[in-house]
Length: 115
Length: 116
Image (cartoon, rainbow over all chains, first blue to last red; front, side, top):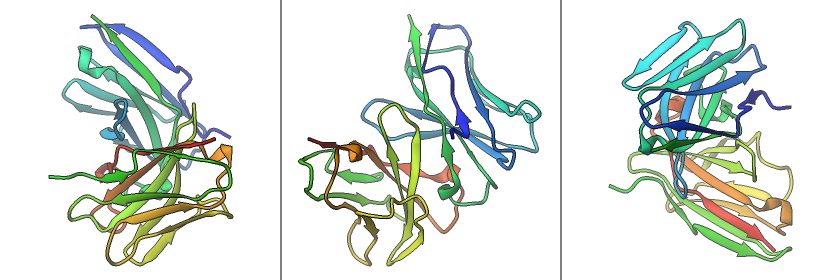
């Protein structure tokens, strides 16, 4: 049973436009959410996170929105740049202070930024 | 300024052989996690270790898989009698202390195991 779902395997966006990556979860116990970015032949790198006590967290061009009632979160990248082309993983855990043994990952979305 | 180092990057084994994957954590980090990514899947937690101690192995398959993090040297993920279904990318991540929080994890580039 997939507790964290990223239903779009890939997404193509024009450079300069907004990229919106979506993630749904089913476990209502999750209260901490993260986005990771992964380039080919590299490991995932942490991008941004949000706690369930918030509905928005912003860091430069990256904003994560959380809709707890819908069990949905999204990552907005604006403006999109060629270097943003990568696979983006959504992850969730119970408790932000817990270990990463509690992390549940989605399957990832491959974002392609078109020039 | 080495990050998390994993080797080998690529490993090919025949069914029934043993696979050993090594992970050296980032300098200053004393805790190691192993994740597995099967084709077309997300990363799945396998095991969480500190030096000479397994903290959580709830994600490890019950048979053929073992992990250690000795006092000296890298962490090792060992897969005995490999089968085709073990073909995957195995990622190691490290953190500075017990239960540091997922946002301070540093991942290695992964080891890709192919079982023929």
